Image 1 (tube, rainbow over the protein chains, first blue to last red):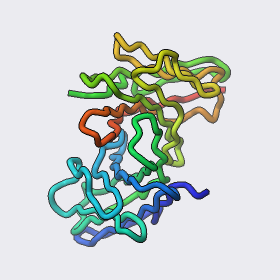
Image 2: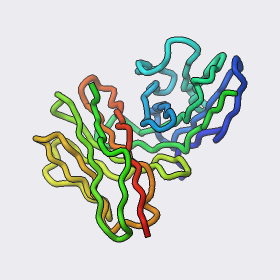
Image 3: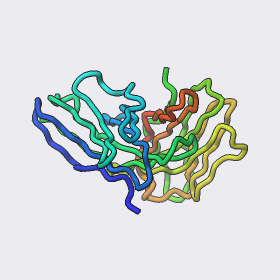
Image 4: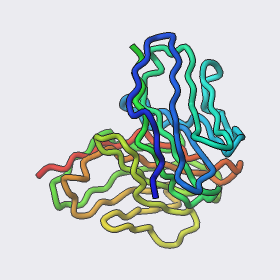
Amino acid sequence: NAGVMQNPRHLVRRRGQEARLRCSPMKGHSHVYWYRQLPEEGLKFMVYLQKENIIDESGMPKERFSAEFPKEGPSILRIQQVVRGDSAAYFCASSPELRANYGYTFGSGTRLTVV
Amino acid sequence: AQKITQTQPGMFVQEKEAVTLDCTYDTSDPSYGLFWYKQPSSGEMIFLIYQGSYDQQNATEGRYSLNFQKARKSANLVISASQLGDSAMYFCAMREVSGGSYIPTFGRGTSLIVHP
């Protein structure tokens, strides 16, 4: 039973390019959460999605960032026209349902470096 | 205001000794969950332990236990018999039930180094 799969593990983009980060939740999990971790900091919530719906995007920057979780396929976090400040580790977590006592399963993260 | 506060940026412990990592939280929601995660140098986030706000007993998972003091709003992680492999960043997180989104908020983390 594979865990949460994120790819790529490492991504290098030049300023102005687009970054696409993929997250395949655990089998049977329909809730996906994206977090960003800046160096020496904790995880900051970005967006919460269910299949085909964005439930909460309160942590997402208003411009250049978007997320989707289509009916088929992985969840995608897209960053357009990347800047140096976007360099961070991006984590995806999934859960099967809304349960307060469920410890999310995290992927191994995508480390984005903008040069 | 910070919802999760981890005041120890770094901790050192001798192998085989116990160590306590501090976590305090702030919420007015009567129903919430508290979590601890471990992040080794390889970068992945590993779920360790969970404590619910209505749980009467402190949670335990192997060498990990959560010292839950509700009135003081603290949820400290205790690692017994430390091992070299315990060296990692440790994050405390809280999930509030009100609002229905169940989105955990994380602290800034504590770096633990276990000495041989």
